[in-house]
Image 1 (cartoon, rainbow, N blue to C red):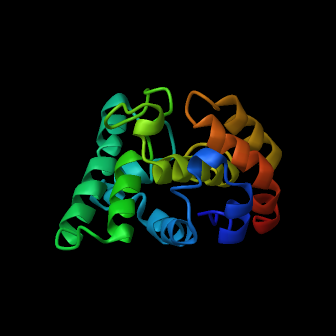
Image 2 (cartoon, rainbow, N blue to C red):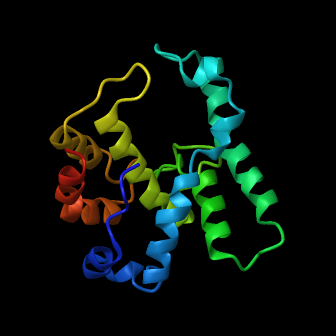
Length: 178
């Protein structure tokens, strides 16, 4: 997955409303915790995960369970360490990385800032990575097309403030993906 963008860069361009939450520790932790975002897919059949054509409605419902499975797995792993920032963040990301800013995501239909900040960031980064890489039956998009698609989803799928930050740093992603 695309690297989140580096501590120094995030701190330089971090919007004021995020400054209390985003620290060097937050950035270092999210870069590690984000790697577990899809851990729940381990419980999904390969016949669904590796399918090369569009999923059926039933298959879509099955794949959506990976967020709950992943969060519950991580809750079990980190149950004895409630103060563990990495564990809390990994659980939030696994559970909420498919939530949309406008409430149309899953599994809990969260809206706006009810979605953990770490999940809002990972959702955009995951989407960018999916777009430039292609997934299953979907083709890969160019960097420019991917940026355009993300901007079209600002305020619906993505937090508009996170999209603004992405627009300031997306060229770094392009140079890392050549």
